[in-house]
Image (cartoon, rainbow, N blue to C red; front, side, top):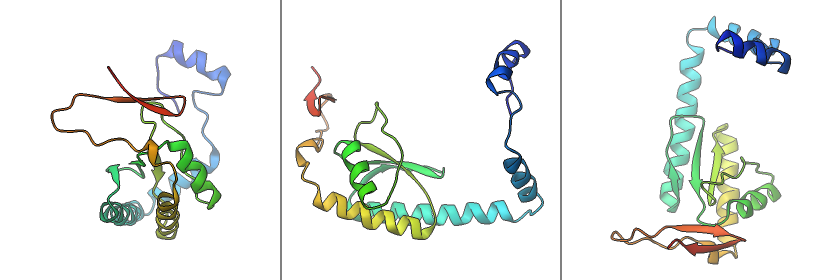
Length: 158
């Protein structure tokens, strides 16, 4: 569904926009609204799994951006592509690379079994990584220096 000015909606309709919504999504959403406890129960399950994952990441010393959503950003402190590919080799598939965060991974929160598999694969990938040269250096409290990546290498900004 789309909400916009009428003239903008006119432009969206030929592109399949406007009111296009998969019938399966409409039926599923309608059915879920008939069960008043379903959404709160699912939120609780998702929150519990997400929090367990955050607790594990903290216990292992990993940096991440906490969220209230069904995903979060995890700083691998090495090029994200390297970690994404290594996880895929272990049959764990995660999101795309974010140019603004070249070392961050977008991790979707799945079932507890999904997240257990992610934790196991991620720990193995990080333990076996040979790319320590990509780890970001620690920044001192008085440092305003920033870093950027180019051609697979890290450089300090002037």
